[in-house]
Amino acid sequence: MNGEAALSRGQQVSLVLLRTLVGWHFLYEGYFKLWRPAWSRDGAPLAAWTSAGYLHAANGPFASLFHHLADSSWLARIDVAVAAALVLVGLSLMLGLFTQAGCAGGLALLTLFYLAQIPTAGVQQPGAEGAYLFVNKTLIEASAVLALFFFRTGRIAGLDRLRHERQARVGRPQEAAS
Amino acid sequence: MNLTPEQQELGRRNFLKALAGTPALAALAVGAAVKGPVKGGPVRIGYIGVGGQGRVLLEQTDPAYADVLAICDINPTSLAKADASLAKKGVHPARHYAEWKEMLEKENLEAVVMAPPLWLHADMATGCMEAGKHVLCEKMMAWDDASCERMRETARKTGKLLEIGYQRNYNPIYQAAHEGIVKAGQLGDVYHARIVWHRNGTWRRKAELPSPDYDPSRWGYPTFDHLINWRLFWRYSRGLHAELASHQVNIVNWFFGAEPETVISSGGVYRFPEGGREVPDHVYTIFEYPQGRTAVFTSIESNAYDHFYEAFYGTKATLILRGETEAYLFDEGGGERPTTVDVAMKGSGPALDASESRAAEAAGSFKAGAPETIERTSAYRLEVSGFCSSIRTGKPLLCGPDRAIGSAKACIRAAEAVEKKTTRLTV
Image 1 (cartoon, helix red, strand yellow):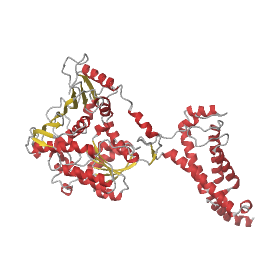
Image 2 (spheres, rainbow over the protein chains, first blue to last red):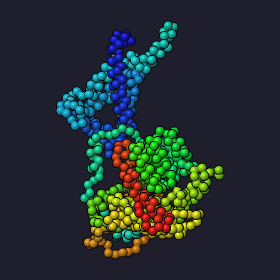
Image 3 (cartoon, helix red, strand yellow):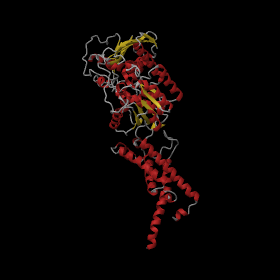
Image 4 (cartoon, each protein chain N blue to C red):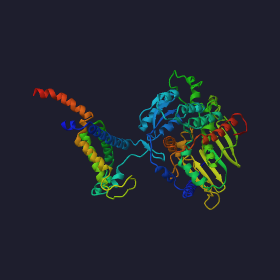
């Protein structure tokens, strides 16, 4: 608790804002993958989302593992699991509830996304809005989540803080008794 | 129209061969696809009129395209049957209404699919559009010219989509025939079309009163028979011309790129006068188009041998679209034209088919599984889905008011000519 108390108001607000924005990014990505509320311009609702394309396009040292997953009978379950995990991580970060678990889950997902497509080309790729070498936005977001993990931002603001305070209230008389 | 198996085989082969040079329609969508998707889930829809035809549309509504929130019908029996249809599809139940205006007030709808009796089309469609809903209205457009114009004007004024339910426009066979054969000039000059819808049986339907205290006069019908058999009385209906011919005239208008200027019509209640039936059970009509082109329509309720088809007789070839599910092409002259005219077996289709909605089963009996045949019901599915696509993505309607009004006016004139015993009327 002393660590959080040492943070200035501006530092606390910045961290919680960062957590909320990263949470929204996860939540909306998951929501869109699960419910696909959109239509292609040629007139049909979008087909169910699948990670197959992303996995097939994997490169780097773990490429063969991701390619194997794309072709496996597990693909449908992987798709649902990834989308559901994105929603859960998003909710966790936005609400500040089980924030440490949410950060850990988010970090795991982002690490997988990064490892599947490590930008080694150094030139702009089709569909990408910039040129990347080793460092891309996925890696930066992962670093942000890492920071959120160690700053324990749920205790600055969020439902974790309420949880923590409630536990502290319940725990105090026992401490006094002992 | 009955063709021998050899003729069917030859006709199918010719049809497919003629289409071979047509660029894939799918290629046209590529430009649209690169622009990225547009927002929105399934279109929130309410149904008005879930009797026979309304239920066909309801059953063919793809839940990925449309979410049916409510259904409205003055007949509780129809609502119960519609519930069963929805349950069979595995979608959530829809709320019930008897009053369509109440449904519009209480439900958060974006669009309405309506299949009430013809005399109600204009009031309901304009009411829905004025309430901010897009409308898919079952054919024919409306009971008289003024109502058709009122619907068209309301669509223009409100900016809401108005589609008239001629499902042939969404049928891939008709689209392929138009694009690959008619427009490509493969028929040569077409002076004559024959449109036929022959059935053997009465159009009269039987139904039990939904409850002993059910009062049809509340809804404008003096008796329950009038409510159930509205098609048989001039006050509500335009008879065979509205219910059957308008589908086919709509196609002739599309393929000719023109609308009839005059009609010559004859007919009468010859076989089924019971119950005070007013609309003819036999009609014979000539639709005269500009530049010497003519479509001849016959509809009889005393023989189903010919069943239903549209045939286009060109100087180079003949195109036959049969039962909404099959297409045949026969060259005029040349070595490929069949020279034998055998009488085909009638097949196992039902001898009595009293419904323009359920002829699918009858037509289905001819199906041979060839790639140019389709399930008739899939055109209804494409129609409802296409309507939803237009709402979400702005894709053009295939049968908006401007296209539908031509066939409506011609069929209204044809029905009037029979009713008034006037031989020839100007459209």
